Amino acid sequence: MEYIDKIKSPEDVKKLDKKDLPKLAEECRQVLIDTVSKNGGHLASNLGVVELTIALHRVFNSPNDKIIWDVGHQCYTHKLLTGRYDEFGTLRREKGLSGFSKPSESEHDIFYSGHSSVSISEALGIAISNSLSNDKNTTVAVIGDGALTGGLAYEALNNAGRVGKRLIVILNDNEMSISKNVGSVARYLAVVRSTPRYYRLKANTENLLNHIPLIGKRLSSLIFKIKTRFKNFMYKSTFFEDLGFRYMGPIDGHNIDQLCEALETAKMVKSVPVLLHINTTKGKGYDFAENNPSEFHGVSEFNINTGEPNYSGTNFSEEFGNLLCDMASKDKRICAVTAAMALGTGLKKFSEEYPDRFFDVGIAEEHAVTFSSGLARGGSVPVFAVYSTFLQRCFDQLVHDGTMQKLHMIIAVDRAGFVGEDGISHQGILDASFLNSIPEITVYSPSSYSELRHCFVLGIYHSDNVVAVRYPRGEEKNEPEEYAIRNDNYSVYGNPQAKNVIITYGRIFSHAVSACDRLNEQGKDFCVLKLTRIKPIDNDAVEFVTHCNNAAFFEEGIKNGGIAETFVSMLMENGYKGTYRINAVENEFVEHAPVSRLYGKYKLDADGIYGVCLEI
Image (cartoon, rainbow, N blue to C red; front, side, top):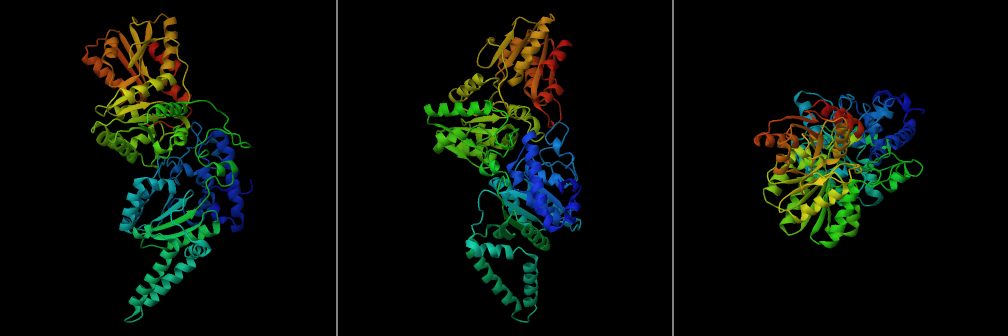
């Protein structure tokens, strides 16, 4: 590498000659492709913002000037240019660099950013705080057009335009044109209006006109109105200016010179916030990613030469998608809803086979739940597929617009439990706890593909309120061929007369079975009670445990408010006289690491369960 290995801080980017910047961009892309092919991660979005990131660090002085990424998964080049090139090979590895921006990792990362549409709100808060303390530094929010499908971004835009503080919002438009331009003249004018020379000329002209006695201000106002009408004719959109922003663009997001000039111009605007609209190509520089940006949004390890993933096998998401298609073929009431995650949640096939019953609402999870309540009220059976981490945004809607209304909808909670390298913002460790607090909701946690199917049948055809079916990332685990299924709600593996019992649910059931077998070989007399319906807990399951001497709970989720605590409370009310132990995630967030390593850390693998129970 000729340039990138010499970049130790943004100051080194500023020292480079302009003619060397395209080569730096090329080297950045090569590092991104090489690293993500080995470690997995977000590729297409990062390839699209290479030139923008270089321009940002040429023009602004991070970390005094605050650059906020929305979502933080597009900040890989930012990491490379802020002193983390030598560590970049550890990206998404245990104890290595995070796949998102992370303040504890670098002073140049202002917020941990794993969820969408938050950057403008955060940036506005900093801008106002700067104003209060007379801090002249600039705050920049970089937001993709996809994030503008989230309502929080519009709340922030509306507020920022009214407040009128020094703030730059960069709209990275890589999939759709927010404001249609008309031909080469419009494109030329967009570039001209984004240069410091134009801005200085404009400011000086306005100042000169305003000083002409009697007619100056009226003449300035007239010229402004004529210019505005002409601009509206050319661009057909004044949405951002109507909100109170100074709009600039759209300009080529892969032209570093144009980007630097536009950013310098935006810096000169102090009285109103600026929205700089740039056009980029998602996946830029890697043909496979350019041609299939959705496929290369978030990827596992892949072959650089073919673009093919190194692992291909079935998983819970795919099984869910196939199952829903099968059920929809027999029941025309069934609809599928997603929040911009059709591919990730396994709904691509459904979208192709039943397009009239498939609804992608964008990155708007709150709307998805309330929209689903409307579908349910109209007689449809909506199934909203959402990652556990994003379901956190929907708590009020689940309560107020779902269960309180007694509406029948299904929430397919994908990636419940540990998700591994995606890390702290994406671990699905909270859903069981917060769903557990909602009255009248039913929650299932299947441990296998066959149980997944059974739980959806129960949810769709044997319930009249909100039902959540939560399942993990990845493939099913090996389970015993035969064990006693007591009913739809729980089952028992091993000797049902055993005086010691392991209670668990979800995919760690397989680990519990292995541990139970080893314990029994040691003469410890254990069985496993596996919950399938975790909310409400079956009273017969509680009764079963009441007769045991020792109970050990293992939960792949947060302990506070979790299923184990509820079960123990019911045990105590039932007069339980034995001992119990709860093994779950204590009051903490879970950092990124392979799922197997997290199981070991939290004693949820076979060895961990065996070790804990051996002490009983």
